[in-house]
Image 1: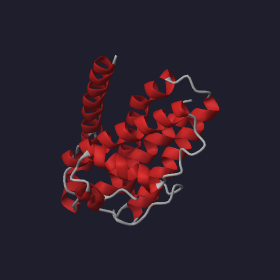
Image 2: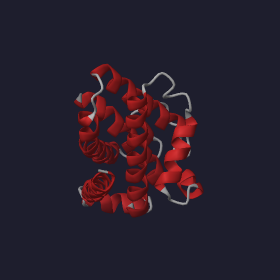
Image 3: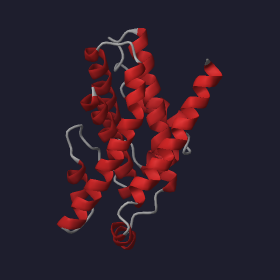
Image 4: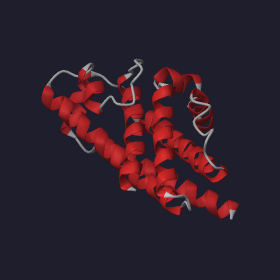
Length: 192
């Protein structure tokens, strides 16, 4: 199951990377982080360092989303289908800084836009599978907006500074994931 969750984490880290790089080019589902980075960052070592940082962000997001997949009473096949649909939906949504501005940095608005980018994604899902898909999109939108507002503006100077303090992005993401985890716990308590 961890591979399933890792694919979702990778899709979210790609979205965050595109926002940070102010990349408005549509990223296909199969594009790797390094493919996105190559067009914007000079230097192989710098590219690899950014890829490592954003891969770590994707891993942290996946770890945070793992309980949602584990709590599900769905079969492994259904969870894999949900993950593939989420990854495809994120690719279709072409999330970038302009989109976040149009959504007024509102996670709920972003989630609605993301879902509308592939309205048929859940067509063959059960009600429970659709509920999990929606919950993951909504929580992922929280991550994306939270990270986007806290990331420094991308410039060559900032890139150099970040590379000198290589754990800044990962630390930022970890604190945001903890905040969202707290929100999830509070919602669960309020709903329960």
